[in-house]
Image (tube, rainbow over all chains, first blue to last red; front, side, top):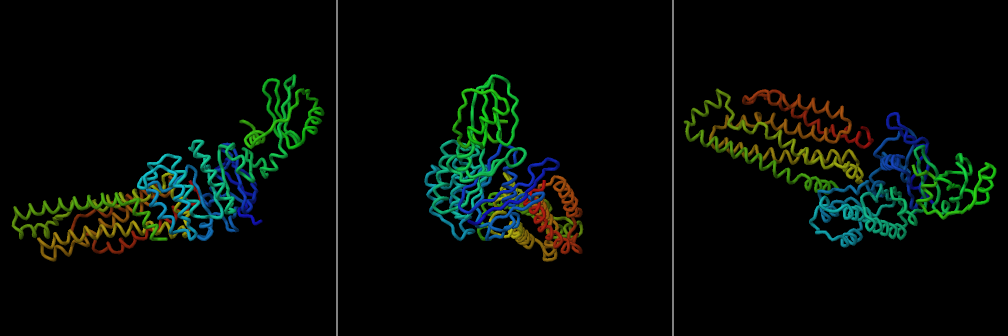
Length: 294
Length: 222
């Protein structure tokens, strides 16, 4: 499977402030890839670099083998880009904007756009600026799908959307991408929505990338364990304990290791524990487990 | 594709364009009515003398109109592009980025030219219906500095609005004010006759400045 996106040793600073150093990941064709991180960890910076709107301090970022800041028109036609906040030409109405974009893309699929538009209860002459955030998100999605790109880059698609529109957005996207074998790169601050949607993820923290895994592997190998302890335990993160949290005498420990190995490790650390339970982690729990709540 | 870009630009600025047209026509109507009054109450020969020897410009009210129109069109065309960084959409279109930016400016320049030419022809027809050809012939060279100011303010507005670095924005604005003020130093007929054509061509070169501001926008320089 070909790598659609390759990021190698990417480093970026805003002035003296480091965003990340030596970021590496790749995105394989036909996969849905999520860039997950808390606010300020560099998600938008990465999207800006990926879409060619920011020059990194060092390292390289390629899309279909071309440097992202020098994409040829042919490659740009293969990349659908959703800007954070579903930004579009809000001075146009849904007919005008379709007419505008359709001439740029040889594979333009008018039907899919108008199918989505038919679900919106808006007048065809209504400008995008007069629509709700949810309606604008559907216009932006319809335009990207009609473009029929091979790679879709979606910067925080969930911003400003209520649960219904978020679900509609993802349902359409999933149906479309799976049927057409599209590659998707997505960021969102609502991680629970992406559970069951993503194939792979990069999880970022303030110090850079925490992990890059397939969601399947993450769910199989990353676990949480709770137990009661009688004292204030001074745990530290190590090869076994990825993260931990203590509220009064209840401790939660996150690890890529199995139950027995974690127990043995706690014993070795002379941590007293009882009521040791393995807890089921969904994607959001795993994210919190890896990056912490703060 | 360029037709499609033109379509977008037109949707963006059509109201501003119509307002500009209305402003220009309104001022020209006012000029025409004033002139009719002058003709009515003064012997035509005396009026001609006044125009030729006292450097009276019957259309002096029109002086700042191209400047105002250039500014209106520049703002109407480029402010929506910079709101929410919407220019990213235009630069992500499958066209060379330089071509997109230059086309946007060229489109505005063409609409300005159409408008200025239209106003010029109306003023010529008003002038030629009251005055001899010698007076009407000075119109073009006398109006050209004002039209050039209109083009200049349009080009600089596009650059200043797209520019993301504030120091550059301020420096370019100051330079623009200094340059454009030069076009209003004299109110005489044919005052700029010796220099206006090269200056006009020089100002046209400023249309390419948008490439630099667009480049900095693209690279995320702030």
